[in-house]
Every structure is written in structure tokens, then in C-alpha cells.
Amino acid sequence: MHVIALSLNYRKASVEERELVAFEDEEVIPALHRLREQKSILEAVLLSTCNRTELYVVSDQVHTGKYYSQKFISDWFGLEFEKVKSITDVKVADEAIHHLYRVTAGLESMVLGETQILGQIREAFFTAQQEHTTGTVFNKLFKEAITVAKRGHSETDISKNAISISYSAVELAKKIFSNISDSKVLVIGAGEMAEQSLLNLTSNGINKLTVINRSEDKAQALAQHFGGESARFDTLEAQLADADIVISSTAARNHVITEDMVRNALADRKMREPLVLMDIALPRDIAPGVSSLDDVYMYNVDDLQGLVDANLSTRKEEALKIEAMIAESMDSFEEWVSMLGVVPVIQALRSKALNIHEDTFQSVERKMPEMTDRERTIVSKHMKSIINQMLKDPIIYTKEIAGSRKADVKLDEIQQLFGIEDEVNEIRQQDKAKNQERLRARKQELALD
Image 1: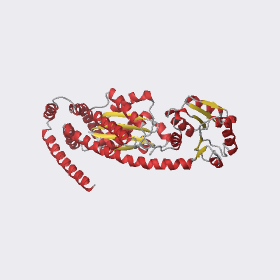
Image 2: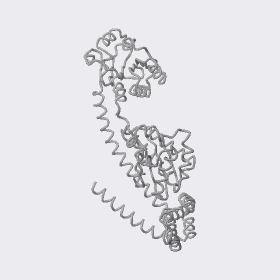
Image 3: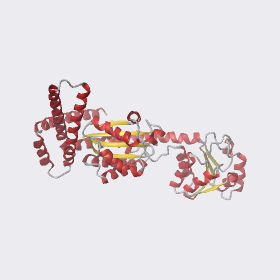
Image 4: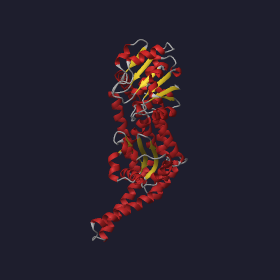
């Protein structure tokens, strides 16, 4: 039983390429079943988010499982197979399991340590479980990965330090105001940075929001989306006088906020709280001289970037703690798999089938020596296809025995039915020796540490 992870993510694929391989919500369930029906695929989970599409499968053959996972993507989205291969990252066995743990814990995300992916993985797993495309292996593995991710976020500070400019602006404002939820916030601009700022503001309980942009339609649409208000650009000075916090992120080439505008706004202010100005635009939106005015706290991109860099360094340190949790959990999972008892039986089943294929094909070649290379390939391929189709259900049944009552008795019956007792015993002896060697190597690693 081989765990395979096929990942199409921001590290290897462009935004345009990721858009080509994104599943709509209503596609996920039918796609899951289509994936599960592919040759050699015994279990399947499908994850599709804005930054990544991931297929996790359990397969009885590595090469076949990898090929049909990629072919499934190719067929579903109508893409050339070579194109799919070029933009996907395929991992097998321990690397695939490690990848799942890292993704679930947010260690593979664009924003290191973000927590949203944990909920997305959980939902993807629950969907697959409800649709019966998971089994003994994934029911255990995904629960372990989710548990480790939860521990990582609760026992470390990986998600407690801002590592985006817009988020840092909000976090810094929270330190200035004792109760930021009561603050009036003015957001200047209607682009991506403004949208991220509004998202961070509303998630912190701020609901007194005003959006200003040269395009009134864009300002109105963005404000409505976040439950705020919009205002005309020519009222900017009056809005400054009424705001506690200003976050500016326009694409203007010249200063949007001048010293005179801020000086006049301060004179008109009814409250005595300081005015906090966050300039997250490049080129800068706010004239540098504004920072010298009384009752003004002003921060620009460089100020906030220093906070981001320090926090990213902290997150990387916290990530190492989560990696240690992952290593411990992976060791436990590998031990659990080795104790299932079904793996040697499945290996023996496949080994015997391959030996039958080889002997039978040699017999065919002796009786039909005039076959061309192409005919040999076709005959061999179809013989393997027959074997794979015949074995799929027995292998799935054998795999699921691990979680049933009287598993040992049932496994003995399968061995007798297929005549593989000797092969199973030999494989078990080899596995025992490998495990002992792995434990020795692990003890040496710990001693060196």
C-alpha cells in the first residue's frame, strides 16, 4: 500500500495554471469517485483551494498510481498529459505523508503557519470519508495529520505574529488603541492591499469602516462587501478629521495626503485620540513631513516590513517545533502500518500475480515467436490489465481487514486461498529486519542530537 500525493501549488504553477486545475465545489464529489475508480487506486482524498489542488491516494502500485492520478487530472480538465506532469509535484511513501502533515499544519502555505488550510483539509477528508473513498489507511493518517496541526497551532506561536504588510498595519494599530473595535477606520484605495486590510480589520471586530477611492463604484462595492460605507474622494480631508486609523494603499504617483490636509484635519478633530496613519503604498501616499506633526503616529512600508521580517523569523523557529511533532507522529504512523499485518499479504498477492504474468507471457512468446515488438507490448499490457482488475477487489478487501474483528483468522484464510503462505512469511521476515535497522538508525540519530 503506497501513499501518493500529487500537488499543484503556487511553488511550481502560475496563477493561470492553477486556475486551469481548480475544482468547482459541485465537482468535488463526482471527481472523487472518478479518481477512486482509476486503476490501482484504493483510497482517495481531493483538496482544491485558491492556491493549491492536491490529490492523495493509496495505491497498490507506485508507478500505476502516479500515472493514473496525473491522467485523471489531464482527462478531467482536458489538458495535455505532459502539461499536467510539468506543473505537478508527485511524492510517494514517507515524502507524501510528510507533505500532508506540512500542508495541514500550514507549513507549505504562502503565509507560513496560516490556519485556514487546516479547516480545508478537514473538510476534504470528511467529504471523502462520507463518500466512502477513504479506508483504513487514510482514516488513520488524516486524523493524525489534523491532530498534529491542531497541536502545532495551540502549543506554538506560529500563527500569532503578522507576516503580511496589511496584517501588520492592523496588528500595530491594535497595540496603539486599548479597544480597537471602537475605532473609526478610513481605507484609501480599492485594490488587493485595501481588500486584505479590510478583511483583517473586520476579523478584529472593527465595523466602523469607510472606503475612499477615485473610482466611486469600486469604493462602494468594496465597502458593501465588508459592511462599511463609501465616500467621495473630494471629501478626503473631512474623512481624515473623523477617523482614528487611516490605511492608504493607492497606486497614485503623487502624495494623496499632504501636510496641509492633515494639519487642517487635526484642527477639526473633536476627539483627542492620536491619528494613526498607515502608508502601505509604493510610491508613498502620505507626505513624509506629516510624521513631524503633533498627535500623529505615521508608519510606512519600511516600518511595517521590519515587523514582518522579525515575525517571519519567529514563525520559522516555531515551525521547527511543529516539524518535531510531525516526525514523532510519522514514526507512530509507520509503526501502526507495520502492525496491520495486511501489507505483507498484499505484497505477496501482487508478487504472485506478477510471477504468473511473467511465466504466462514467456509461454506465449515461445508459442508465438513471430510476434512483433508492438504485439508483445500489447499482449503484455492487456495481461497486466486483467491481473490488475482481478486483484483490485481482493486487495481492497484485504486492506480493510486490518480494522475488523478476527483479522488474523481472515488473513490466514486469504493466504490459504491464494497459496501465498511462504511468500508472506518471507516478506514478514524481511520487514522485521528492515524495522530493526530503522530503529537502530533512529537511535543513532537521537544519540547524535
